[in-house]
Length: 243
Image (tube, rainbow, N blue to C red; front, side):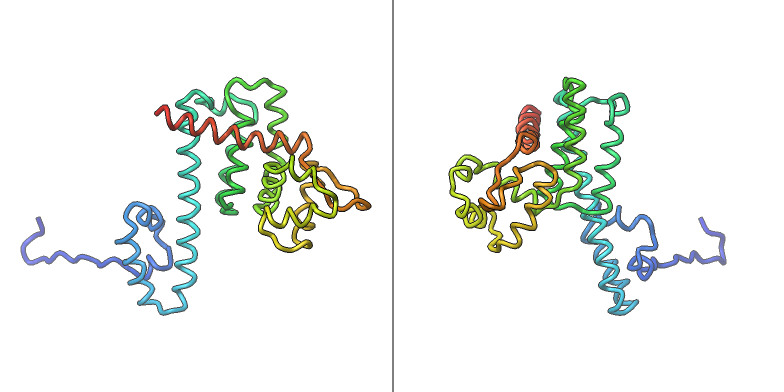
């Protein structure tokens, strides 16, 4: 209790500092109580003027997105651990901690979209899952290195080629690009050519013969890459259904 003759002075929260994200707890507060914290941030922005609005909210949205992506990855891997698909102690598995650190860094620095993040999670899983032989883990680790190099557009094209490989392979060379445009939604031959370059360089699809046109189908490497994505989805769905 305060002594007689003394008054208790309560310093109001500095909303301007909140808007500048100078308090380290702001992002945690935002994730725990988004409505109240957002109102406090907007109060701070009003004090600082409109120029602060774009910089502050942009940083907040990026940080919130990164945190949400990381939480989603941790949740999925925890389900797989509980199902006995991933080891409990990553430090004991070859390349496990390294790939984990790399995955978290990619999320933190690049905020990958859903297609790219899915491929990264699948290759991480293939390289670290319980029961995989040493050779299989080593091969999967190289696919992990490939996954880090691919962008979402290239993954979308690879998926379309993989899922429609049989029908695409039956087409005449001059029919391949028009059908690929339909399957991917990339209604431009130059865009498709641009996306095919890294897929061919990484040996995920066949190079195509310039004399016969740009016809490409998945290579054995491309098939393994796509199979890993399918296996990750199946094992994750099974793990979540069992819990």
